[in-house]
Each structure stands twice: as C-alpha cells, then as structure tokens.
Length: 508
RNA sequence: GCCGGAGUAGCUCAGUCGGUUAGAGCAGGGGAAUCAUAAUCCCAAGGUCGGGGGUUCGAGUCCCUCCUCCGGCACCA
Image 1 (cartoon, protein in one colour):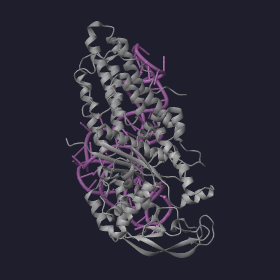
Image 2 (cartoon, rainbow, N blue to C red):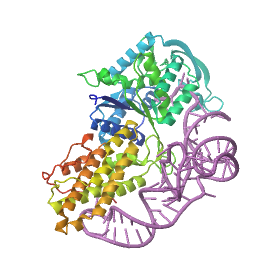
Image 3 (tube, helix red, strand yellow):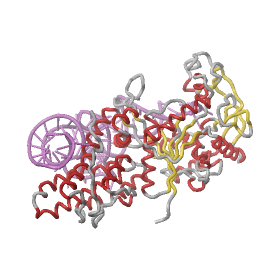
Image 4 (cartoon, rainbow, N blue to C red):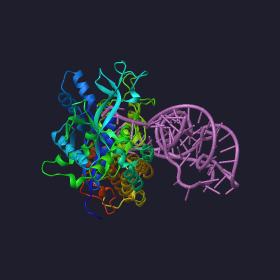
C-alpha cells in the first residue's frame, strides 16, 4: 500500500449564457459520484467545477438584456452555484473564469507559451458580418454566403491575429495517444480523437481583436484570448487560488480525470494537452467523454417538442437521490441514453422503494420484532459472505475506469440477492420455533450486515438516503474498508435499532 | 462523399478468445408467502441475434455485401 494518493477530478465548466439544465446536472452528478467513491477509498480528492464566462455569446446576450457582460455573468453564475447543493454535489471549489486570479494565471501560462515560441502573428481570413461585427464559421453560413442571423451578404475579410502553433504538437500528441491508450475514454471517443489527429493539425488562432470580453493578451493588450484557451486553463489556474492558505498546484496537478461531454472532445483531447505541452506543464491522465441524454422518445430534448426532463421537477417530486440514482442507473456512463419522468418514476418505485427501501424496512422491522432491536452477535451466513466477497474490489476496479453504471449494477445484484435470501430463510417461520433461534440469528445478522455493506457502496450514488439508513443501523462509517461483512458479529448487542420510516416513500 | 459506431425478447440492454439449450431487468401472464412502503419470491411464456452470401466440425461473435439509424470530418461555445 502506498500512501494517500491525490486525485484531481473536474467537470467541464458550464457556459453561463443559458440557465442550468439536465445536461449540466448529469455531468455534475456523475463526476460527483466518482469523486465520492474516491474519497471512500481514502484518496486525497479535489473536485473542481465552475463556470465559463467569457466570449462573444456572453457579451452579446448581456447587451440584449441591457447589462454589461460582468453583471450578466454574475447573475447567471449564481444559478450554477446554487445548483450544486440542490444536486448534493461535493465539489471542493467553484471557479469562475472572470475571477481576477484566474485571469492573471491565464496570462502567466500563455505568456510562457509565447516565450517558448509557440505563438506567432498571422492573418485570420474568414467570412465577416458587418452587422454582427464578427466572423462566421463555415458550417453556420447560409447559402450564398449570408449571415445566419441577419441573412445579409457576408464579406471576405482578414484580421491580424495571434496564432498558436498547434501543428507543432502533432508528433507529441501521437506519442501521448500511443503511450496512454486510456488517455481518452471510452474507446469510441479515443477513436474520434485519433481520427481528428490523423487528419493533420493546423494552427489555430489564439486571440480576438474585435472583442473585448475576455482575458487580455499580455504582450498585445488590444487582443483578448480566444475563449477556449482561457476556459480550458481553469483546471490549472483554480488550484493556485482555491485555498488562500495553500497553493494546491503541486499537490493536485496534473488532473487525474476530466469529465466532459462529447461536444467538446476536440478541445480537451487535442488543444488542451498541446497547450499544456507548450507551457511545459504535465498533461492530465485521462479525459472521460460522457454521452448525451435524449428524451424518452429517443429524440433530442427541446422546449418546442415539450419532451424535456426537468431535473428540478424530479428533485421536487422524488428527491435528489432519486435523480442521481436514475441518471446513473438508466444510462450507461459514456453512452447516450433516453430518459424521462415516467422512467424515473418507474425506477424510483420498483428499485429504490420496493427493492432497496423495502429491504431496509423489512430488515429493521424483523430485527426489532424478533430480537428487540439488537443485532445477534453471530457470524453471517457463509453463503452470503461468499457472494459479497470481493464486491468492494470489483466496484473499485470499475470506478478506475469511470464505469459507475456497471458498478451500480453489481451492487444492485446483491440488493436483489438479499431480498431473495429473506424468502429462502423465511425468518417469520424460524421465529415460531425456539429450536431455530440460531438460524434466525444468523439470518438477521446476514441481512443487517449485507444491507450495511450495500449502503456503504451506494453512498456515492444516494448519499442522503444512505446517511439516514446508516444512522439507524448505528454504523455510520462509509469508508470503503467498511464495505465488508463483519465475520465475527457486527456491532453486536450494542445496537438498539430505532424504527425506520420508508427511505423512499411511494409517490402518486 | 470519407471515416467510425450501432442494429439481439413488446421496451432498455449484456453476450469475453468462435464452442452446451442466446441471457438479465422492466412490462404483460400464472402461482407462493405474510417480515416489510401491497413491498417480496418462484414459474411459465416471449428471439429467423437488421437482410443476403461466405469461412468453419461449429457463427450473435470472423470475412464480403446490402439496408437502416447515429456520430466525427477544426477555430459556435
């Protein structure tokens, strides 16, 4: 066993231009589950999330609302900050890219990129809309080279611009991909990154001259950095000021895991490591690309179709744990999946209430009824012990690959096993016959211990419910080491189990 | 167009290196039990594994081809 390992995990930072939605909630929840699991292992976890507040869309929307960009960003960032406790996210820090400390650090890092000779002045040429005062991208332009917003003819113009020599990192990135096949996960996402790399890298513009809402370029204050270069660096800059008492950079950098959506794969798997290499900084260990949540009908969620799953509605009706559980249970992490309120309700009722919640209820009730609320001081059933043996290790191994869905499936198989065990042993029959007292003791202890172990393993997914149950069980330890059936009588005799009200009450 | 992924039970999916009768959950059907939130458990049923061809003693799995769906193909974040 080595000492405590540092584990730095991040979500993508949310673009503040719109309100928080299910997609944000999903990424936060999944990342939180992994972070909580790693803490259970005793690792030194730092979990970072935040908001991305620069760039033209923010400036535009602010203007449309009659606000200056900072005021608009402030207003919207609050909504994302408020989201964290609503989802029970255990982030250690929330970074905002308009934080002056972030901006200063961005300038430091990119100045080093510049000093290292990876930046040059060039001409950016593109289709320009005079009404938007902005260049348009090839694939958003309407037929006949017209502006997608104003539908007026665009003009071909050039702008003096600072360029990042991305092409120089073709070979280093190829080496990185070859040396670390898990740098991008799942494998499908790695294929995509490699395909992009294989098509040959071109230099990219690093700055914008016609925009002022961003981090100014230290060697040319008439420009601001292109928002992506500023945004990506949040992962690095945050460590330097998250704790005013200690610079966390050496302790946590490089990141162990960036969790992102598939729409920003290219930025995180190509631009980001290249930028870090250009600044002589170590690259992250892994980027995990999750899928998109689609509506129940398999189509994209959209307000106009009215098929949106509102996370706040789920929380209000079924609770935060229900939302967390449903999203990770229903959708294989790393793939797209279909979700909806009906499916969420179905899983809430059949799995959380009927299987796990009811297992807890019947176990506590039987201990109280047959053993006056005390856990018998006997060893649990060897068969159950054997069937739980290695479970925590398997779950850990799956989390090493960010497979929190499969881990949950393994845990859930044991939830079902315990319900089956109750039927096999029929404690209510054993209780009628004094000569069966030892068998009843063993049965009840096995159920108590099994339920406790499963709850420890479920803690990252449904922390509020687990905390409540473990308090009733008198066994609040959620360290992963506690996820093992105690062989010599658990907390025996000393526990006086109180009543347990339903963990997941039925809703209409 | 090029590249990649996918298509298995009514629904959502698993299926390792080619190897016994293709599995699970949910939904629907039948039954048992009464500790429990009427919650649980058991049983049965349900599949030309997208179509066609090939390799093989043997193909959901490998090869070819066709169909359908999805994604990527760079400076919107």
